[in-house]
Length: 497
RNA sequence: GGGCCUGUAACUCAGUGGUAGAGUAUCUGCCUUUUAAGCAGAGAGUCGAUGGUUCGAAUCCAUCCAGGCUCACCA
Image (cartoon, rainbow, N blue to C red):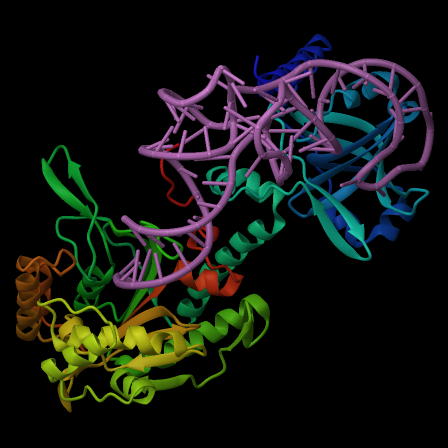
């Protein structure tokens, strides 16, 4: 007999005892009169009024001593101590109290008072079981030493925390906090965009063709139609169809899927915000990003700056703006503005940057940027004017056809957003996608595919448009001081057990 | 994918060739104001898996599985 089964067996025995007493361990209803935080907030009022209160929650500590016992229960609002005395709850009810286990959901009826040691508590008049637990919860204890909370036997196994997230949420308050902040961020994005008259939409997850980013897709199959479908890798191409359709400001916050490696910053499914605004360009979008992120910082933390590990990040406007080529030149002294492929290749080779035969100058410029510049961009920075070669959906800069009106947002050395003045010239867009198809034929599995339906939409006419994509998970990491994406996704992808 | 590290009781961890350990949790007894309650006692483990070396393996070796950190690349 395995140990865990013994522990479960003991709890099942208690269940049987309750049955023998004709008491349901899983009653349909309870009678909560107050949330625990309400009591804690105005303790003296509740003590003075001596009103009967009914609180419910999960049992997380038990100190029984003969005919009296103390326990703690918590609901989502807070935690409180319960005092149970045999004389006061009756002998029968005390028997039920003795069948309580850590992890059980219980209801306590009683009045508020202060114990001899001065702790605000509920003096039970009646205890009721609301939901019996069968598996023992890991035991975490806290002690206050010199005003600081010390934790014992913390539930800290990272794999278990991810696989059994409900335990993590239950036992690690910081983890719960992270997901509350995540929810708040998403909510505040919606509030911010609503104020600016954006319309939230939903576009297909299952797509006959995928596009809008450089990535490999997941493939699935529709039985009735007997066709393969792709899980979207981006929201872009459908949202632009809506711009064509006369929706001037649209956004979607949704999961996208990329069939690529998993690591600290990559989960196969992740959440993107994409928005498109007609009659706007990438300069307008830069201002929008500044306003949005500052709004989030203020709404979530009531501050214009945050701490991320050792760094203090300030979101105060305006953020630094610099072109990719400028930044490379400033950091390395190398001038790539002539797009001289041989010269750029040589620079890469001299600096141990890998050069594949098929890549062009634009791709290499990006590699140089990533290697030399990215890690230096700690404070929020708009890196502008990306090479056209690596930006097939962005409009070129009128004054330099090698470049596009595109920017990425960098904070703390990481990319948080990607935006451009959208390419709305259907003939130019066709050329760009055809170039992508050639790359694909040369073996680039991440190159775009040609989406005739999207091109047809552009042929009907798309207004000048600014578009933006922001990775929500990474933004949440930034705001919650986490370095692993698994910490900000409730149920991250794991290998099968 | 490369390098480094980890896997022992429900939880947190000791244990580096000689009978598998501690604290917490659980159970039993005592205890009517405790708070990491206390005291006394008990039960609880395929030492990640499989092979090998050895008289003898949690420990050494090999392979595999799972995980973490880190480097390179995709958001």
